[in-house]
Length: 468
Image (cartoon, rainbow, N blue to C red; front, side, top):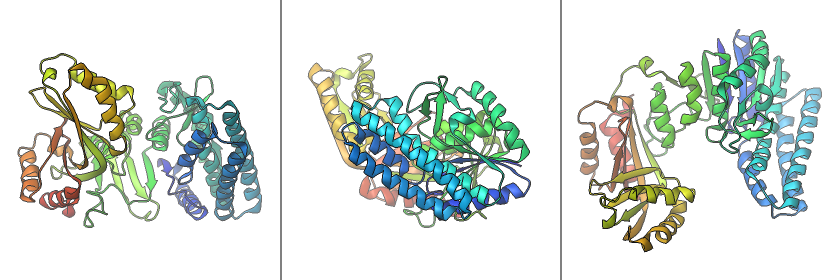
């Protein structure tokens, strides 16, 4: 069996975790499996690097030294626990020291110039995976696994130059991966590849943004034509609801690619739709598994035709920390481009709209956005639109939550929407806004935040999701 295994930040958070990861990998390799490994940065390191990068342009060199010393210490502690062999420890420590010194120089350069470009930001955040991958490589080597370490750039992942959200050039990337990684992989050598980072055609470091390391894993999986891609995390699989909200939530044994994409968007621990793209085209299954319970087969994500038909609803999610913005104006009625102007204003100010609902009267648009940017959204819309007569009022509600009900079999099943909203009504809860796409894979609606958990519980019980 040929597998790409991706380990997230929580799976490599400490030296003990990394040693456990190395044991899992080498056990599978000894069972006559071909294994390639993709590694995220240690838990919290990427966020730290983002902060350091942003602070560096207005910091002094002393602050940079303090921060890089903390990073050095964190990784050296992981090395001492993850690797028992002194010679391998020494080898990985030398790589770590060299990488930290390089990071220090980059941050010092940002500090002196006083400017952080998207290109230099990508370079700074790439150090998270560049520091973690050699430790995982060393731990696998310590378990006597034959292994080799690569950055995404060295592995052959080539992207465009859209720094921060780079898009792989898949044909060229596939050719390079098969050329550089393929022969080693087929011989049973375990390639350890940095997730999240790649390079453009000029060899300049880029990052693939949302879905990061998962994306790297699926790119590798498609290029190497593996049987499955395994995403190792700290949960057993994808659940019917958040277990913190619904203790009786069950693990879903299988999902279609489309269902997984919908669930990821609504906050489930699934894969970002971007990361699913390479394996959808190659029809390679993905398995979400837990490093804490490796005996659990987890949730398999595969082609819709392979997924057994179950109930119409598969999961229900609750998204908090959101706000609803309402834009009203009689002059919007029948005015071509009025909605476009609203969306353009928000888009130009980097305000992402999560959900939209409009009335056929055209006099109102309701939008859901992240709560922490609602103030910016309101001021932006007021400045740009209120004075022009197109819009008469812009209001917001920040005590709301979104409930998303999902399942591929909802499509074409009569009465699902009425059953959902009857359940909400029977719980004595009012719906503030509704949205459903033509895919019919999910119905999303807004309720008061205080009612969110009760709605999720009522829907979970009504559709007997605890019996899956």
